[in-house]
Length: 338
Length: 116
Image 1 (tube, chains in turn cyan, brown):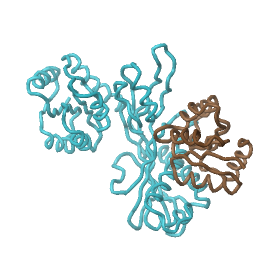
Image 2: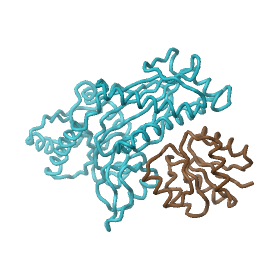
Image 3: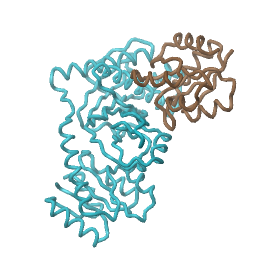
Image 4: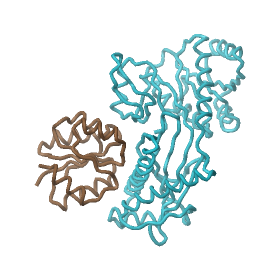
């Protein structure tokens, strides 16, 4: 596998690199700037980052992997406080390795990445071009429109071709995770200025709604759209875990993954673009002390006596994450998308 | 008339629920998540019903049910339709489950039944 390494004390780092090379991997040792270029242009399978580097720098490194194909391992020296682990995970790292570590441990971690990639490939997102999947997408478009129709209290029309004629001004999306197979599905709603004005008048009864109010309305509409999709998938035995809807400026539109878009026409010149996006999101294992709000449990979490604490698919809140961090339950399989 | 606690992280939903219940004569107290709801419940012992979302930041509706116990009747109002989740909420004492988007008349009817 191709591995990029950033940071690290030269002695320790050299020994580790030698071990990885012996296992048949190709290693590039790069500074942060060159590593970011590599992540954008020729993403490696694995990025190993030796802490301490600033969390901002770490976030920037993880964010440079726009193809979401690189597995990031943070190496945490033992003199760093425990919060360094949760900060590294929050910055986008997939795994944490405590230094000092043994050669076997390092090789095992990299081998795990290879296995995860195998699972990732086995769980390819559906291809929308087949007839069956096109029907499925149309079905999802209709169930989303039905619930939005109830929410706005008037008849809406669905167009299979999405286009925002005037510039998009607000966006909200809801992330959902099918944790058992490592897939993320998100539904985003995009509104232009005229549509925002209409939503303010009709749902908030405010002729001059603030940006905060509009974001709240769009987030709730995304939440309702997500709920419609989740319920439509239940009869197929697919249980999606939901996150909290996020919204804001549409500067960053959903990236180029498997996606489908519709236009939900609310009235004359007033419509919402609905973008559904599916992407593979490999699950990972983190130490219980690294659990944070928003992570979704892939497996049931049980205590030492075998008592079920939280079922698979649970999205951790601040309080449940805190409760699990206090328990000695080792590594926990999670999906961080939601 | 009874006092109802409306728990939802969406301002729009809090506003829509309040509008429907206020028109039916109820007094409304609002909370933005489960933790806020526990605080409001402690500060307002006269609350007879909570209308509660499931997915919220900080503390979810299910955790609120766990913590609130039998202190108040709880009606869930959510986009979730998972049978396991509904069963869990029922086991924890939830008295009803309404799906979003909701019909105001249905919500008021449920409130009339549950808010003693």
